Image 1 (cartoon, helix red, strand yellow):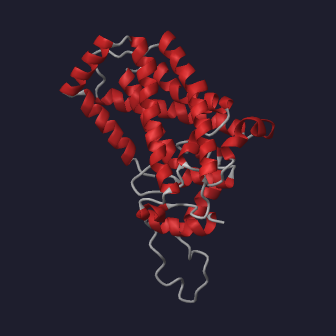
Image 2 (cartoon, one colour):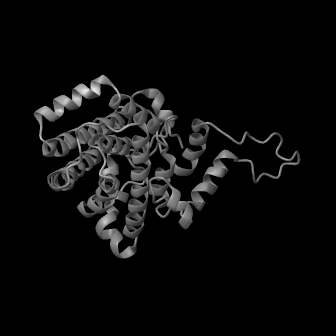
Image 3 (tube, helix red, strand yellow):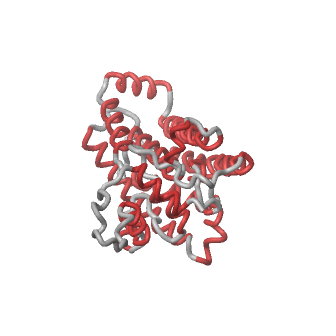
Length: 301
């Protein structure tokens, strides 16, 4: 799992908030918009733009097969969505944003607007806020997600999200309205409102999560990007890797098969009985591309 994308986003946020550009931007922002307008309309506009631009980027990988070199990182290359399937996914994504995300954004902006004024948060506050909010999301998302896999609830609230065993980026919010509210919205807003964070840190956290969930649902495990194999395995195996981080999966033992599978991918000769004692076993650490080559044999069927 690479932390590079998150580290880049955190660094950009810290550098920007400590720059003269930030002073100018927030002075202009607060002079022309109310706290409600910033927390509601600006929040929804920025997060929606980031999500759709990122999703369309991955959609180009699937429908146009461009750029060509990215296709080597496709985890399940024999499973792809048609344009007709994509159009339904896009409709559900837009529906969830308009009927769930925007109303929640409006309500929170009206009753609990976050601070948009000076002073801007420093480096320690920025990192602490991200870690705290991520833990809140891990706890909330894991338990809601695992609960939705209960037989009495699954077909009513979560089955739609598992319609595709080889997910695509936009499928990250391809789900029922109920699931979108309790699984995708409430766990991620909990942390920022518990801490009463600065608005800039909420935007940072939301955008990082959006880029992360797009990548982990994309079906492409690109080096240095967010790690996609964990969640792709969840869609493939159904009953493992429930959480976004994986800590609670370890606690509850919901990643044993995934870890065994990864071990087999990294060490495919472990069970061989060659007389030469598996002459010069493969190196323990393989590149993402090597792992994908083996993953295709397991997943692409």
